[in-house]
Image 1 (tube, rainbow, N blue to C red):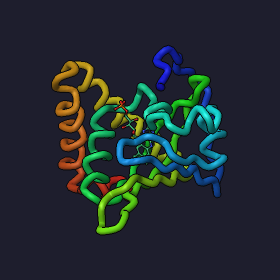
Image 2: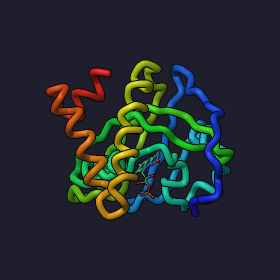
Image 3: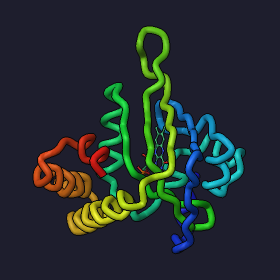
Length: 173
Ligand SMILES: Cc1cc2nc3c(=O)[nH]c(=O)nc-3n(C[C@H](O)[C@H](O)[C@H](O)COP(=O)(O)O)c2cc1C
């Protein structure tokens, strides 16, 4: 279970070049595997992670619309790339560049998801953090019912202004 009482701090853990943070989930996002680096950065034990929802490391600075886009993409059978700010058990944070893919079983049915994260580009993190904070502000202003629509609109406006698709923008950073 996610502990909502964790207070976010300004302590940052930086991924090293060559680090890969790997996790697997079932179709509902329940963690079924985490590699040693995932365990190290999360600050949780393997026992705490296995069987927990992946939102156990969700950082409150992340807009809801980002996860909506992630889930819509992977549930439709496609791969998803994103810069994500995660929160460790001690409230510290770490930025990752993540790639999430569906895991297909017999007959092409999605049986779970697989995620590999690597060290993000520092300049990209600064840009993305700015976009996410605008999305989050729009979500808070809109209220719970309209939050995702409002956050998504901020992202769509930015993509339209840049004349790029979401994936094009992520790789242009
Ligand atoms: C394979 C996989 C990996 C995920 N990795 C993360 C992650 O690193 N950080 C994160 O906050 N959410 C991650 N999620 C999304 C979470 O399941 C969840 O949707 C998100 O944390 C938002 O949680 P909330 O809906 O409770 O706000 C991942 C989902 C999947 C399927």
